[in-house]
Image (cartoon, rainbow, N blue to C red; front, side, top):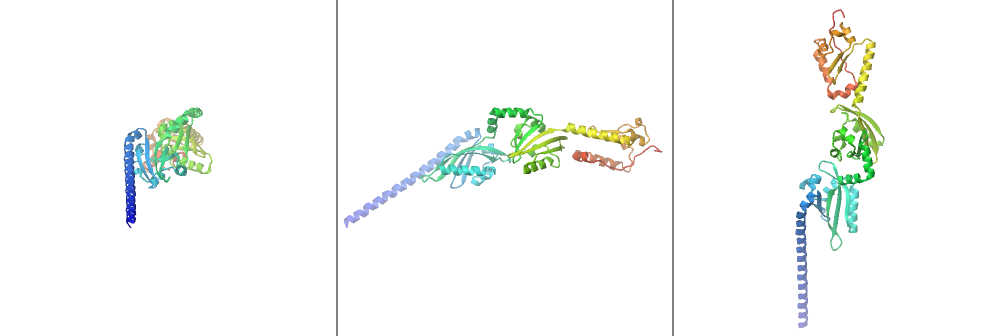
Length: 380
């Protein structure tokens, strides 16, 4: 009986020691975890300035919780503040370019499955809507059971670096030098219509610097007609793979452009040139020919040069009113004062409206027609 009591007491003491040991181990683990958390916070604070200087973004991806802590230069690189960045995986994935999502997810799955480094290049959407090419490098951490706990990594923008690497390639350098000496503007667009490459002539024609174009949407920095002729032709070429040639008038600059559109598997390529001078000559020749033909038929002609605001009244026009050529000056007042008083204001209003800059395209494809009475010498 006494032996049994001693045995029970011994077992009780043993269990108590084990319980105290487990509690001590749990306490130690908690203290260790707490210390690691504090150390991690200290490292983040210490590295914050370093990351900002290098324009890098640090992150801690809690795999089980599907949460991401962001630090570093996310505002400088991507334009978002802390609240806009979000702290869930879904917010991060939503900013990845749709064409890159599958690649990034596959690489992440591989790194977790093989307990190896996560590394990927992909495009992230900036707050301004443009895409930035990022290099993502993360180290997964696992628990004792081999289950992924977190990934600690760094994001770095490499858009400019990739361009510099391309510039360092002798073949690319020769190609760029050749393109920069072309008389035509040369533009390469990605599938989303963003500038990938432009030559020097394109920058001159678009009145922009190369760095202000690369990565931006083409329609924010490329002239098009009021009807969107170039944009419509570009969409069709991207869809059917056919090359197209268009001529457009960009009214804000009063300039004509000729554009050849070449579709590629990765986007579109433009070769374009300013043809304003050619268009002016064509219009002048057309008007001159029309004037000669009208003279042969003894038809009176008055001609308004919109560029100089000068008026020409042909000898035939003057003779129909009973005047010799020298008796009427080629001047607006000469024409206006001979319009019937009841019709003068309305005719001038309609003519001025037709000649407004917003109607340039229509002026080249239609005529101004107006019936009015004009004063002539008695008997004519």
